[in-house]
Length: 293
Ligand SMILES: [Zn+2]
Image (cartoon, rainbow, N blue to C red; front, side, top):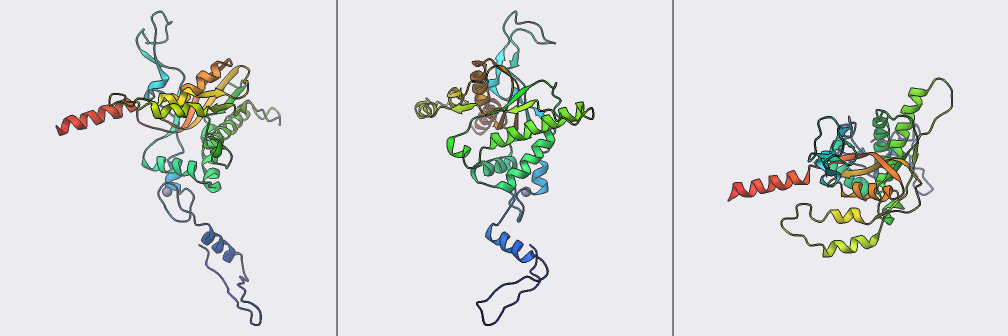
């Protein structure tokens, strides 16, 4: 905090606080009125400290093999691609993440989703935009589509997937312009932000009644992806999906299915954090239980 340079009391009137040399006083008051601390580690006076920010600077890692809902088994006669054979699992589309969804990354994302924090939004948007310039896009038109969020979050600045989608689009556009650039001053925009997906509230009603048995290692997560629909007709083309966290892949799979009904093909997805494969988590739990008995 900036120390106050000079405080003067003017006699005869009501006490006034004055800073003669600079506006440090008002900065101090600002800090007192709106205390800030790092969303990841709690360090004082920063929205996201450099160490925690470092966690989101990439490079992008491919993570779709962690998400069971994004895997399908290659059918017999399904063509040949490298070393893939019938029976091998293949992903619906590649998914890239900037970080593992560990303790710090989880705290930052949960905080971003649940508080209106313009400073944190600005920092993370800037970081993701910079990371997105490393994405080599072919230069054709593409829609950047955020995974849907609940109504309230959308309308008070906590639409995290929306912020991320705009950041990714800006980064992709910047990279395309950089590659094509210097020929002219015309800025090319190939990545168009399209907020077209919605969650149907009716699908959440079904979650309560969903049978959660001990054996269901996905814990009913598939339900979440089923209520996703396209709000406005998207009208074909290619799309890149954006979400904050990848867990089972049910949400992204639901988004891709809804878009496919409008002839939009999802070519890739980008997320901030990727959780460990739920199947592996289940195996670890079982292992621990067996170790104890
Ligand atoms: Zn921190």
